[in-house]
Image (cartoon, rainbow, N blue to C red; front, side, top):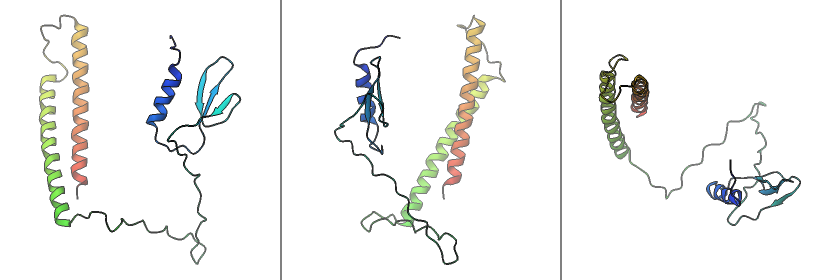
Length: 170
C-alpha cells in the first residue's frame, strides 16, 4: 500500500472535525522512531498535547454518593427532570391525530412491502426462477438466484419491522 505524505494529519484533522467534543482528556500527537504519527488520549514518549480550536474537554464524571433510605437500603432514584415551561406542549387530541397519521403511513408501507415480497416470491419460483436470455452462464444464473434470496430475506425483515413498529404505536 502506498502512503501519501501528509495524509495522516489530514485524516486526523478530518476525524477530529467529525467527532463531537466528548473526550474527557487532552489529545496527544505522538511520533515514533520511524516517523509514524498516532493520535491518542494517553501521553507517551514522543507525544505532544494538541491545541485544538473549538475543542472543549468534558469535565470528569463524578459519582454522587449513594443515598440511603431510612432502613439502610438505597433510596429511589431522583425524579426525572421535567421539561421547561416554555417547551411546546402537544394536546392529547393532536397527539392521537399524529399517531393515527403515523399508523396510516406505516400500514401503507406494510402493504407495499408485502406486495413487493409476494412479487419477489412469485418470481423466485421456489428457488428455480426462469432463466433469462443473458444467463447462458450457469454462474450468472446462480448469482441472480442468490440476489433474489437476499432480496426476499430483506423484504421479510422489513415486513416484520413494520409490524413491530405498528404494534408499538399507542
